[in-house]
Each structure stands twice: as structure tokens, then as C-alpha cells.
Length: 408
Image (tube, rainbow, N blue to C red):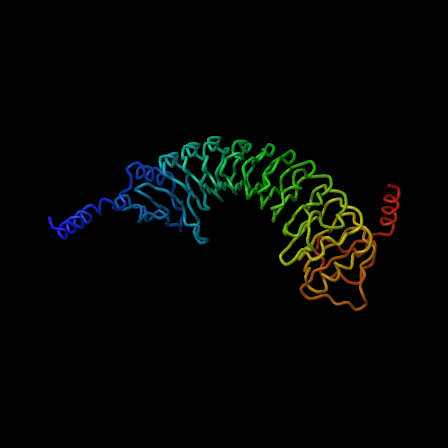
């Protein structure tokens, strides 16, 4: 046979077998998709399942939300995620576990109810589970402890109950854990995996802070019933976002948390006490808060004089504490040059805001100084309604507070 004829034969053979190599979905996966569709339905004005025609020769290319590799489903996205789409209703079928090559399972917002199938724990290749903004109930399956490849778990905005399985926070590859806005209870489990993002806000969690990995960059535990001191946070040098607001934490704020690289810090509405540090701890270069930074320490029991450490923060909330003395010049300058756009100092025991007569604030600035131990010449017009209508504290309150602190 000539080389030209041999080459032609190989080409013809390739063309002949090409159709069989084209996506011919595994019968097991096709049956699983049929079961999944049978337990879900489009909410009116949603047409996600309109493309799921089981007579189609190639479901991998025609089914919305389905991605395949080597005739197996690897990604399943249920719903469109479009803002004008109401999503899906129904329940999640245990047959999802028959998609044994699945690496990503996504359920977009809708009205899906019922439990999370514990059979999902059999899908050893899963890297992403995102089942957000639905009405899923029951507990987080303990079978998830078998998902050794899981990178992201997002079960937020559902109606899940029970405790967070301790095995969940020790999965070796887990980097993102979002369980916010459920009804989870019990204490925080210790976290031994190298998490980057932890969001457990708006649950019913109780007890103290547990050990947290040094790799964390984002932590939100707000709106729970967590108690005790802010232990274990001093070493989290990678943090850029921390929200522990609306809990019952007490004791001082670790000095290491006052760090410009932690540009978003929300500790409001706790029982925190003590004063503000006079300088940054552990920083070798001169740094300050800057554009986009926000620090909220309001509604606590912070005492002592206001140090200039937080000057430069774009939004700073120190209202409803027990701070005394004069407002440092650094804050005034930061307000005047427009670096600080919101400065709330109302409802403290501050005695002086050094300013020159006729001082005019930039239009972009909101400054509130009411209900302190002074009569402010500025800082009254941009106060929130919650500040009340009184310009200053009664003199008797200021005298009693000063006497009490001098005795202490």
C-alpha cells in the first residue's frame, strides 16, 4: 500500500468514527438528569428546562446548565441566575449522586425546598457546591466529610438547622465556606483547614471564638450570639475584612486588629471595653487607613481618650461609647481634606473638637458630634436620626462620669 493510500485510509477511518466520539452522554448520567428534572420545575416566567429535550442526540451541548467531558456530566448549574428569572421550585433529587464525574453543582436562587441529599457525599470529585437563596431545610449532611476535593461550599440564605459538622471545617482542600443566613445553632467548630473565606453571619451560633487558620482573609460572624473575648485574632495577619458585629463579645480589642491592611472592620454592637491603642503594633513602616476603608466600633463600652490611630479611615463610627477628652487634630484634618467622609462621634463624653471659627466642611463629609460634654459649633446637621435631638449631654451626666472615672 502506497503512503498516500495509507494516509487516505486513516483519514477515512477517522471520519467514520468521529460521530461516535462526539458527545454521546452516558446512559447513567442521562437517567440521572431525567430524575433531577422530575423533582424540579420552572417557576412561572422561568424557562430553564425548555432546552432539556431527552430526545436530543447531544444533551451535553443542548441542555442548559450541563457541561460534559468524555461523555460524563462534570458541571450542573440548575437555573439561570439572571435577575429577571424567578428560578426553580421543587426538591433536589438524590440521583444527583449518580453523576459520579461531577465537579461543580450550582443551584441558583429560587424556591427549592426539602433537605440537601446526603448522597452528595459520594461525589468524590466535587470541588464546588453552591446551593444559595432557596428554602432548603434540615441539617448539613455529615456525609460531606468525604468530599476531600471540595474547594467551595456555599449554602447561604436557606433554612438549614442543626450544628455545623466539625468534619466540615477540616476538609483538606476547602478554601471558601459560606453558611450565612440560616438557622444553624451550637458552637463554632475549630477550623483546621487553610480557609481563605469564612462567612457564618445571621445564624444562631453561641459560645466563644475557636481557633482560626492564619490564611483567612475574610471573616464574617455577625448577628449571632457569640460570647467571650476576641481571642485568636491577633495572628490573622492576612485579614482584609472582619465582621463580628451584633454579638456578645467582651473584653478589649486586640491591638493587632488596628492595621490599615484590615481595611474593613466591623465590631459594633458588642460589649467590648478598654481603650484604643496609641499606635500601630508590629508595623515597620508608616502607614494609615485610606480610600475605601471603614471601621465601625460603635455601640460598645470603649473608654479613655481618642487616639489618632484611626485617622484617615474613609468611614469611621465611634459613636455610643464612653470616650473622653479632645478630638485629636489628625481627625479634624482628615475631615477637612475629605479623606474621612463619615465621622460619627456622637453619644460619648468628648469635651472638645478644636476648630477655628467659620470652619466649613466639605459637602461630601458627614460629621456628627452631638450628645457629648461640649457644645459643638459644627457636626450637628449631618447626624443620623438615631442620634436624637439633644445637642449636648446634661452637665450632671458629664460631672458624674468624670468623678466616677477619677475614682477608678
